[in-house]
Length: 137
Image (cartoon, rainbow, N blue to C red; front, side, top):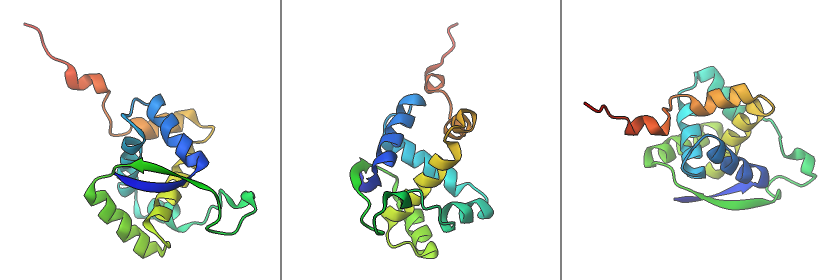
């Protein structure tokens, strides 16, 4: 697990998504978001990581002073390597900032769009019960 300093709304959103879409926990949601982002086209990746959205500028504080809450979320080692590469290429000050940018993007594009949110969180997933199906003869 890694401790991610997240904005309060990010912290809550990961838990809400986990509950709504049958993820085991917020860490599984984060792993899914990283997986989806890595599979996006180069154009969408630029949109996610290089376009400044300033979702939290309204708070009236200087950069780096917006309150955050630590959330422990495990990701795979290869995902951490990928995040570090993105952080370096996009010149984010930290890999934690890269994760906040990633969460900001997907949270923003799915807000008030339940169909898009459902598509994002069911994409490349099977229903958990499908792993337990068997044939009785």
